[in-house]
Length: 202
Image 1 (cartoon, rainbow, N blue to C red):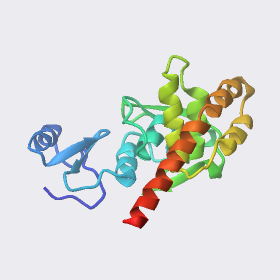
Image 2: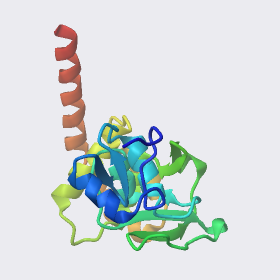
Image 3: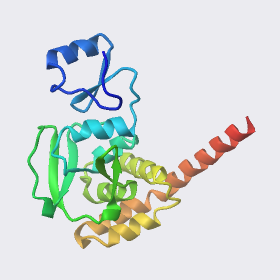
Image 4: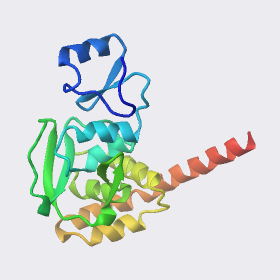
């Protein structure tokens, strides 16, 4: 099975039954609602392109979907996207996606293989703000630490500053959640330093 490099297959390329058969034969693996040939790397680019197939082009991957694209969280059951209020485009292409209208600064968004994704910092702040209180506190703390470590932040100060610029209704809980992230974030940084030292010594 051949395919353009980096572009996941969809039902526009092959019937669903053929894609499922190819998966059973070990020729493809599923990413969101798309399929990649087995020799493709399951990386940020592949996940971003696959996620973009679920929504209109103007949508921005955010929260758990952005964390998944960065490789620090498993794929969510329902993908999360946002659009700028001025875009007026909330039509869904897939029932596996939810889209909300927001206001975003250009600094909050980066582009991966042509797909807009909230930055690791913005993603961490949004998850700290909007994750339901029923979620595992330890799991959320670990996820926020992985996101900030991925974004190469040494501590949570930048995240807390960004958090406080938003609505006070969500800031108090979010700041408390982010404050708990410093210790695991520093532990990840120390692990990376040790790993780099070991590689250099070897």
